[in-house]
Amino acid sequence: MRSCLAAPVALVAAVCLLLPAASLAQLQVGFYNTSCPNAEALVRQAVTAAFANNSGVAPGLIRLHFHDCFVRGCDASVLLTVNPAGGRTEREAPPNFPSLRGFEVIDAAKAAVERSCPRTVSCADILAFAARDSVNLTGNTFYQVPAGRRDGRVSNESDALQFLPGPNSTAQDLTGGFGLKGLSTEDMVVLSGSHTIGRSHCDSFLFRNKERLANGTISPAYQALLEALCPPNTSPLTLITTEIDLSTPTVLDNNYYKLLPLNLGLHFSDDQLIRNATLAPFANAFAANETLWKEKFAAAMIKMGNIEVKTGTQGEIRLNCSVVNPGSSAAGIEMLFPAGDATADEVATS
Image (cartoon, rainbow, N blue to C red):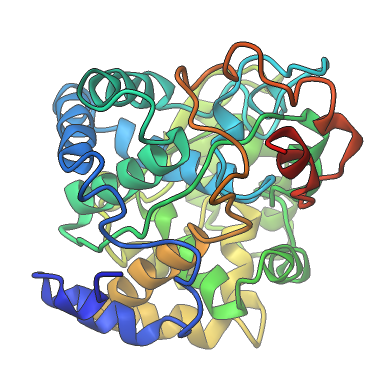
């Protein structure tokens, strides 16, 4: 396994020092050095090309990776359009539809990688690489991505509803949900900083913010702008969006944290970071020190990318990221096992 400290970027050394010693045990930096040496370069090319056309793909890909890892682990299950065993997929769940984006970038990267190295690089790893490249494009922050993930064969709407934290989550909900995935309270506050880029749909903030207006935790002028933007009959299918970070919405920086004490956090969950006595010191520290936050953000992204990964003979290397491979023996098996149980993949490959 290549040492993180051998990486050419200075930030990576600091990141590696922040990671638990066993956190990379299942995955390996440079996993494709022999089998597909240009894999990461091909993914980077696809992301860079898409970003040049629409900078919004970067926050979309970071969020796509997060929503993948929190449901059945980082196994590209969020990319599936069909559940072999029937039922609605993660991709169709309200936390993901219609807001989740970046699928076409992953498809383009996968097509390029397949042309170069057929049946070698997993969709889960491509998604992790794409998220890293998005962080680098928007924040000039590079980190090495340990790889070796395998792709899952099931995607359930119910799992997304159960495990994905929402924009109306309380501090307790957030820390508990992240804790279930092996992430610390600090990791949660760090990763929330990804809201410094990207946009959000009206349904995710409009109604809970009326409650915040009443208790003085959102700027009245800001809320007035949001109410002028969003129709009163806003629903989950209302496609109107606004920037999450008012000041630098396309730059991955620490301004997200600086806006919170000004009552300019867009979501109720964002605002919770400064209302809770345990969370506020972290948010304040990151507001004061962008370098510190970026180092911890890179480390937390690597740690998140190791959640419940499938490796070895588990899962498969999907040929098309949107569907399981033809003839997959898992089609009638995986629905028997709950999220977080790797038995289905083990049975399918036995």
